[in-house]
Every structure is written in structure tokens, then in C-alpha cells.
Length: 90
View 1: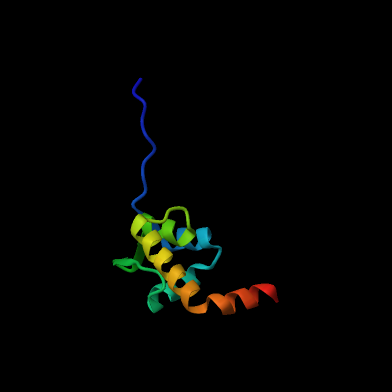
View 2: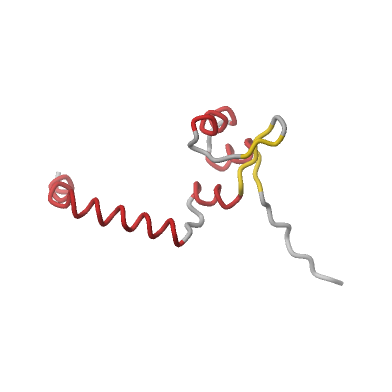
């Protein structure tokens, strides 16, 4: 008997993304309209790519995204280091 691999998802529907994020489907539509969530329109529906959903949920961060985050943190610490230390003591 041949073993079958689980089918990999390439896109999630709006209700699926809402369930993952713990928000309503209407809130997902609102975030799509404002550009907070990247989606493609298929007919009357939207589809959100799985890799983008993983980034939102925090399951996987690409090396490029990690690099950008590291640079932003370094810049913030360099620019606001003393202030961050004072805020940490409060």
C-alpha cells in the first residue's frame, strides 16, 4: 500500500484566517481592504497565501524578514538605548 503525504495548502479562505487570528471574517475583510493583510481576489472571494498567514501567525519567518527585523532592532537600540533603559527601570 502506497503511503500518501498530507495535502499541502497553498491558500486560506477569509473565514479560515479569521479563525487562526481569533478575529471575525469581517475584520479580516477590513484588514484586506486597508492593506494590512495581503490577499488575492478570486471572483467574489479573497484567498490568502499560506506563507503569508504563517508570517502573520508567527509560525515561520523568512531569513530576509529576520534580517530586516534585526536591522530595525539594532537601529532602535542605537538611537533610543538610554531611553529604553530608563523605561525598563520604571
